[in-house]
Image 1 (tube, helix red, strand yellow):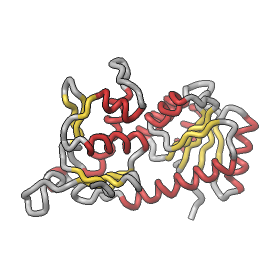
Image 2 (spheres, rainbow, N blue to C red):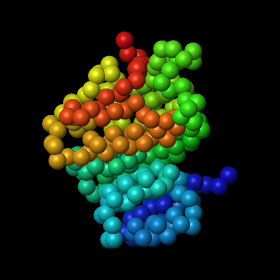
Image 3 (cartoon, rainbow, N blue to C red):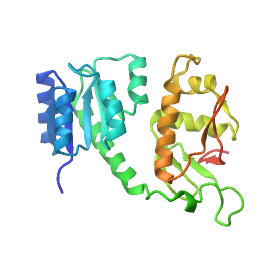
Length: 251
């Protein structure tokens, strides 16, 4: 079996070389890129399992690259940056990064993050079933066509499972959002409630980060079930999970 390809995107030559050498010694196929353009060239030639991405790059902001990768690639994303503020960490996780490390990076920690992420990606690929046609989907009714079947939220595994058995792995932000909506018992959660749950701050009407998290979760759910996600916008209020949902370990 071929070794997983890890692309290290870092414009600091010595750090990039150190990470490539260390990961190669760990058994990975590690290659380097100094910019977003070089990363695009590499991804045009091979498939990456994980992209280790610096934020401050000469040609394109790392956050923008991460958002682009999340929309077009199946690779895991680990952001490595000198930015240590909570806001930057939140932004990195919001756009879909799987992990966020602050420089100076301990190479053994980087190795552990890469291996953990590869395991999660492998489990996600093995457990996600083929999408069901909307007409054949049992997402909104039980097996007998009667009462609505329940979705299941697993706080331990950070996963959401549809009534038909499609398992969706959740990021930290998606887990917080789904937990809040599950606790609302099919009643809308206000944007202020969501902002407090995700970021521990009041909602700012100019801040679109909530919509970003909701949009990514909805896209992920609909891709897994092949139908419309029960994650609805309530005009002037916020969002609601409109289907029955139970939380494992809950009352």
